[in-house]
Length: 162
Image 1 (cartoon, rainbow, N blue to C red):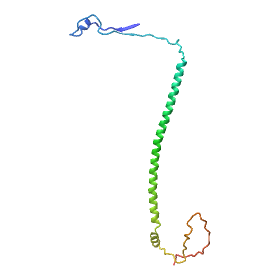
Image 2 (image 1 turned 45 degrees about the horizontal axis):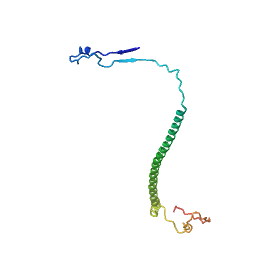
Image 3 (image 1 turned 90 degrees about the vertical axis):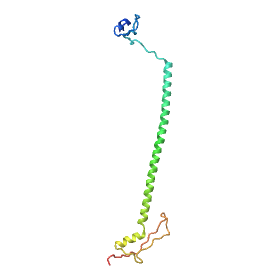
Image 4 (image 1 turned 120 degrees about the vertical axis):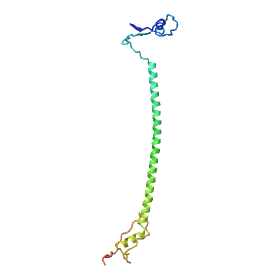
């Protein structure tokens, strides 16, 4: 079945415009014809080609290996970047901890100041100890792992109510 549209000839086109080219008696354009045909491929059987199949399998394996190598490279690259970020984060944490340590060391030094402790004690109404009320510790054994022999000292009770 064929269906189509034919274009007018040059003489027919002359009626539509004032300046028509000289008539030649042929079509202005090519006619458009649409032919529809139903093709039945249900009886066709695809024949497998073993050589082509081998080529496609080897090509697929090659692509898979290439993909794995590329993924391994990308994984290493991003791991290196991630480790860089972690190192920078740990360095910043170390700096914060170092600053905190400096602050705590200064605070400890100010809290251990003997004149400050004496001033606070006198402000609370305490008096300096009298002779025999305190006993200095041995400075000879500075190693904490050295065993120390326990001894009993006489205790003297001083009443704060005088």
